[in-house]
Length: 489
Ligand SMILES: Cc1cc2nc3c(=O)[nH]c(=O)nc-3n(C[C@H](O)[C@H](O)[C@H](O)COP(=O)(O)OP(=O)(O)OC[C@H]3O[C@@H](n4cnc5c(N)ncnc54)[C@H](O)[C@@H]3O)c2cc1C
Image (cartoon, rainbow, N blue to C red; front, side, top):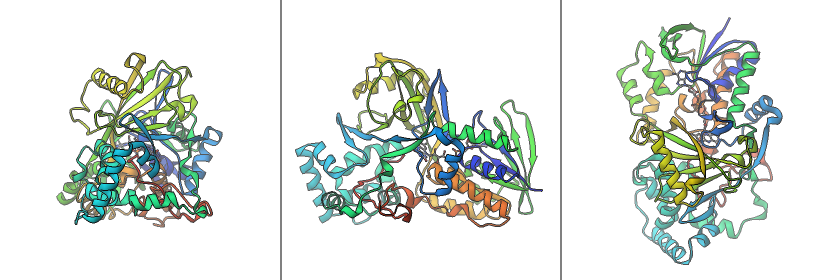
């Protein structure tokens, strides 16, 4: 009789647990936090629901769509999307469109943009090793510095001249300013874009609702979920994982044995708690991988309408603020009183850096002054706030990270009854749907007793462009038309 142990109850772990419990398998999930959902959870404060960022539900995988609809049914609704970029007191379309961008910056800047674009065509950087070189070569230095540089640097905390070009190549694909303008001017009617980006799905009470419901269903089907249960040791013998050790918040330990193991906990953490320990080379590789974190300062404003967008990217370099979510524009039910507005102000930082350790009151003061500075609302209109620190919000694709991942992967693949899933289990900058797909794949492998799918092979890279040709949405063809680039989400 199989006994499956799942480490971590975010979207990936829960999906694996759900698929296994549905088929009647004995499955136990262990989650370190006091609620499920991982970075897709929703935090409640005085009746307000706060998403950690804003989680759009969209996917090209039928099995993921099916799962989401099966779990939430009517509570999973279509939401119209409006998102813009704020720069120099102006709002620009996001995704950026060339005409809107050029007209918005004014005649002088348009001239500089065109001149710097021509310069970049005539005298491009010979090497394209960094984000700055790659993007400037395609868009010109001026457009790059307005629409790519500041936000990207806020997210990653390092200059674009140190970010790998691979990152830009992956997200911006084969676009250039000229191709974007040509597309905008001479767009073929046949190439109508399917408006996946104009609307998305969202649960009535935020993404956590989906994952709380998944948890309830797993338990109803006989699976078990232990919260406040941190996996602190993973024991192995003869090329197989045999058990895990759990520690609760009071320090009490317990050991759980299993036949099959699925891990969605950060792979760097997994490697460090394996017993016996892996080779020093594997531990070294894990130490070289890093994460970026976020702090959301969630504020409640005594005003009915503040702005119409779901979210706004703040490109203005004079504030540290990176992005603002307006939760009632995602779902009206996110706020208990429609005369009020709740905003999530996102700040990017590193876990345990100076910003991360700032006292809550200071963080709030800074956020209130910044939101007033960019004229979104007056600080005096804010009547309450709560602060959420989210460690490990983004895996960092730093120089050499692929080599380090390969070392870890080669080592862990040797454990025949261990499967890695999810954003941090596989160290991939992915969306919920990829995490879920890897969870479903792991479950299928266990059910069919064969490695039908290698979870490492789920490709996140091709999925960033959210548009298809309308003629045949199922052909999964990506049409990067008119997009001048996608911001880190
Ligand atoms: C700001 C932001 C915005 C985003 N927006 C979107 C979006 O619009 N659309 C979208 O699809 N995706 C979005 N994402 C991505 C999405 O949040 C992730 O892809 C998804 O949550 C990953 O799920 P996961 O299960 O792989 O990992 P996680 O959500 O990280 O879950 C892993 C779980 O493991 C637990 N865990 C860790 N260590 C241990 C341990 N030692 N023992 C036990 N448990 C442990 C964690 O507490 C967590 O619950 C966004 C992410 C961020 C940061």
